[in-house]
Amino acid sequence: MSFSRKKTTSRKRKATHTRGRASSRKPKIKLNKNSVVVLTGVVALACVLLLAVSVILSTPREKTIAPAKTTEQSVVSPGPSKEKDTQPAEPVATVPASQHTEVVPTPAVTKNESVKQNESVGRSVSTKPASVARTVTPVKLSASAGSSEGTAKVPFDIPKASAKAVLVFIFDDAGQSVAKVKRYTNLPFPVTIAVLPQQAHSRDCAYAIRAAGKEVMLHQPMQAENLKINPGAGAITPEMTTFEIASLVKKNLDEIGPVAGLNNHEGSLITEDSIKIGTVLDVAAERKIYFVDSRTTANTKAPQAALERDMPILERDVFLDDVVNRKEILAQIYRALGIANKKGKAIIIGHVDKSADIIPELLGEMYPFLKQKGYTFAFPSQVK
Image (cartoon, rainbow, N blue to C red; front, side, top):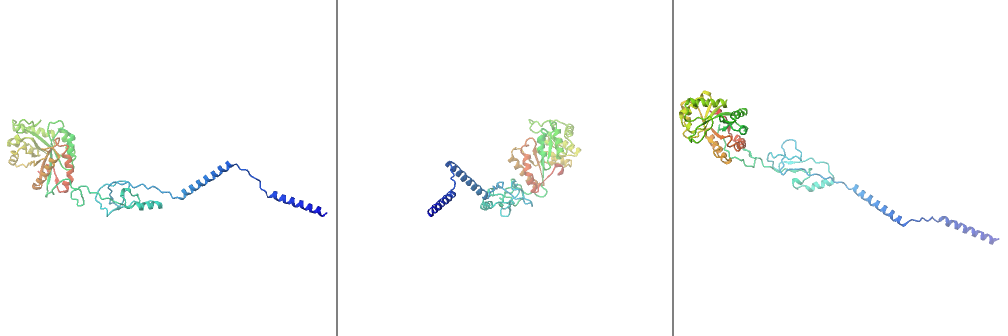
């Protein structure tokens, strides 16, 4: 009886132990080896990508600051407002670098940009960022008479004018080209242009001169001592009577006129004859116009004939372009300045077609300097 109980109890314990073991076991999961490798690689790659994105997002991005556009020589405008740094400044005056500094407004920048800017201080202007103060390079002042700050030389050696030194410019031989005449009428000071009669564009040239506000003269042709020289149409010749001379001069005046005066073209043979040149002066007095003796001969009788008539005339002091080149013409202008400073005025004669490529440009360049030195300009009618 007892043995039977023990046996039964032993079976119960075994059954309980068996159930306990069975319940403690976990089901086995079978994994494919290749799947595990692929899965591991995907997880690793995702981790790397996440790490890279994290690094990029955590790193501050730098902005590239374009260096300010500058010219080789920059000048700060003295006005209250400053031009944009991208616009080149015009060299208008000498600005010492120690006195003026141009500061460009500083935009918002990152910490890294500030470091770069600090490192760039001390470099040349052309390599600095726009937000760094810029020292301006001084520019030499353009040449101008009377400037104490200018470092450039004045291009002309012009003496200071004496009191009331007047320059009277007359340009002969107009009548062939209106375009060339306009080169002289465009000059910014009084000039007088003498027009030849009976030329292709005599009337047109005279009209252009008057329209420009300049003074017109009749350039009366007369025979030279050298009989081989043809003075041109409408000329006074030795065989003419005083009546013929007077009639011819009046006809030429009517063609070109109204005019303020007249002078002689060539004419050394006629101006040496006091009667013939006296007849020309009589017509001038009748028309109430002045006469300028071009002095094509040292033996001119025009001053004597004028004295006999108690009539004032003007006389040429300088021919500008006996030699047609800039250097020689400039030398003659200097000579005229000396005469004007001694006599109070200088009558200066050039030729329209002969020197159209030199004289207008040269006088245009010299005019501001002549004016600053005290010279004045006038028509012959204003100094007679």
